[in-house]
Structures are given as C-alpha cells and as structure tokens.
Length: 160
Image 1 (cartoon, rainbow, N blue to C red):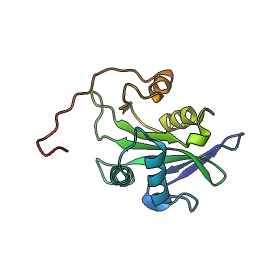
Image 2: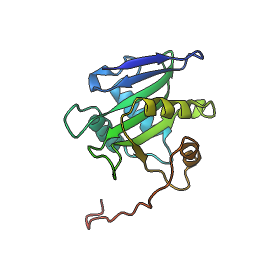
Image 3: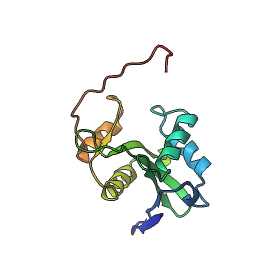
Image 4: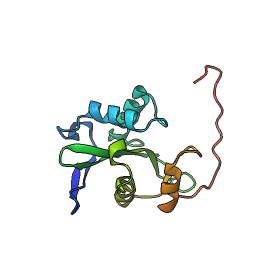
C-alpha cells in the first residue's frame, strides 16, 4: 500500500511497498537509475541497486521494506530505500540502505526531511552504513545517528 503526504512548500512523499506501486512519473527502472546516478561518487552498480529495491519490495517474511520518493509535482527530487533485516535488538530491525537527493535540489533540506519522514514510517531501530569521508555523515549525526561499531569485512577468495 502506498501513501502520499503533502507539505506546504509542495514537497510530497510517496511510499512504495510493492513494485507495482511506483507512480507513472517515476517507474521502477527510472528510480533505479536515479539512485545509481545521484549517489555518485558513493554509488552502487545498477544491478546492485535493482536487487536492493527488489528485495525491499518483496512482501515475504524476513524480507521487505519500502522505497520513499520525495517530489514536487512529477519531479523526483529524492529517494530512500529502507530494508527490513528480520532481526531486532543487537542488530536493528531496519537498514537504511540508500538515500539520495538530486544534485540540483541539494542544500534545500530535502534529504533531512526525507530521512525524518521515513524514520516516522519505520517500526524499530534503524542502522545505516556510511563512508567516513561522505559529507552526508554530518547530516546523519544531526538526525541522531551515532557511530556505535566499526565495520569490518572479510572477502571470500573469489573477489566479491
């Protein structure tokens, strides 16, 4: 079920929980490209973005989440992808996977409003990963996110 919220300055939010719910002005493929292009230089491949959105929009137990679109009229200005982790407690129930704002719309508070709106729509705690040199890290800290752990990764021998 999708929802729409209007704001006085005409910034609106559309919550998408099923792939079929993307609005005509922002079809699934265009939103995948929007995430990929506007997150540069901290972007993921088109294939990884598409897999993430597909995972978020599956209503099966242990999967799911939502995609939130911020727009004015039919102009997509920002987007966020939230995943359910299937966990709780020591691993937060939600992962804020992607958040992005169109370069032309940055500096207008859209990213902060988008994140706040999504946090209000989300049940349970939320975690996110951010590169230490990403300027968005300051926004996340202002919104109340804190660095609790250092992330460490081990990569298998196949280079993935």
